Length: 177
Image (cartoon, rainbow, N blue to C red; front, side, top):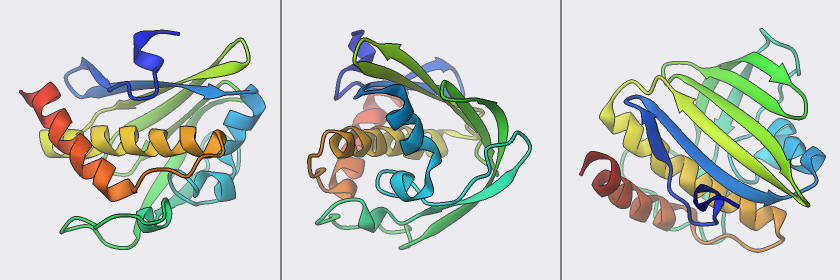
């Protein structure tokens, strides 16, 4: 296991507008792939939204972060109960790679690599438009991946918004400090 794949590992900038974050998730790879592609499983850690597994297909992601943990914690000002984003699959290699474009905030790739009984999940978010979005996205991916690891391990995740707020401050010091 690499240092970057530990439970609390921070994302790193691999280019000025590209964030990379890794997590080691209990396998098998097919289960982790299902958490990326099945709307009902994905909504438990990130966002709902049915997607046809075909390059070029458009789909909508629907975030309801208040539903990710119980309690969710206090939602920060400026965030609504629900957020929707049009997306499009731009690369697909089941069950190892999924890449999609996010309207207005770059593209995200998920790469799965078996490591014994676990799976190394690498998330790379490219073309982040500005520093404000970079901070939101870094804290968001970190918090969402923490919830994914908790869910796959059958553990109740920590309050989402409290984690996100703490992580946003930590990333501000790490990335912009």
